Image 1 (cartoon, helix red, strand yellow):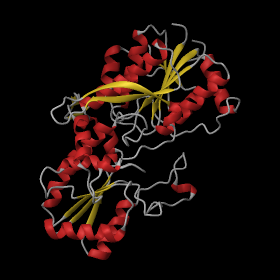
Image 2 (image 1 turned 90 degrees about the horizontal axis):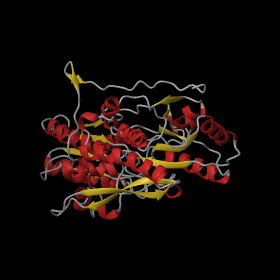
Image 3 (image 1 turned 120 degrees about the vertical axis):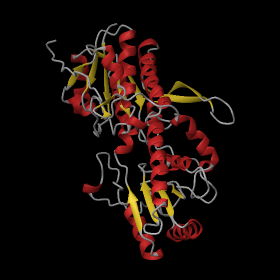
Image 4 (image 1 turned 60 degrees about the vertical axis):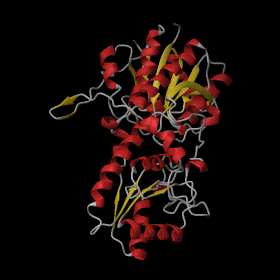
Length: 418
């Protein structure tokens, strides 16, 4: 092969993000690529020329590291702001790619990362640079456009469902002292994870009793009436909520728009939703309320990862290499297409496809209305059937001294002289 591969990871890691990395590395080596490079800390590290040689990693170590949480190469929340290929950032990117003979670039990330990949692809085309750019999907939020679901979502959903089952049993035993519990999931604008938690309820009175979707405008009066009704029927209330609740005017109910309360992409930080709901319930219904925030634990819980999710994550990495090297494609993100529903006795099956990066970049995919019940406080049966196949199967976890042991790679730095 003429030219090297460069792969990088971006954004918040999922528990299966390293399976996609392993898929890229192993497939590229299988196809005869001379050297597979890794960019540390995404595009931010690439701009600083922080590259490692993944070609020298032992195959057994690569297989083992796909079961490691976090991003092996390190992620980032850095955005290339100027799409002009003559701008300083893209010029620096292309200079480094030329320096290290990079012909194929694979970026593992979410919709903001796909924006970066799209800018690099478009810039290379305008400058007539022989470069193939493919995005590999990654996000627990499940909000990438063009794909049935995203690698990382199934495993995170499985962890949260398990948490709701166990916390629900625990809190039910304490209804007399602490009648209301709120668990908040991530998902700024989309309630895929919150909705998935509905699978935890096998019996009518089991947790969760209320699921709040960012897609449904939040109304204080309706919410309090629902909490009161469930409390009177069950004796306690377990609520799961997405972090990005908005009112009818479309304003986040907890957002602050100062510079310290936004992330690198200008998105508002929304961590106060459970506190807001707690105050509403305690001040209006006088019910003691506690809240749970799984936070990064839900992203890192490899011990509860879904086998289906991990295998699809690796296949997405392999498909990216196939698109770029075997088919000569560029400017696409790999997608997962469901070809077997997993419902009604039909076996679940999937395959990989592609969607233009331009259609994915900075676009949110919301939970459709038919996936939410008519009242707006619980996922529909259709949604639950959509999620169920994605959380199936377990992954092998190496144990040492009674708790998980996660091996790492060598990550030997590449010098230009090499």
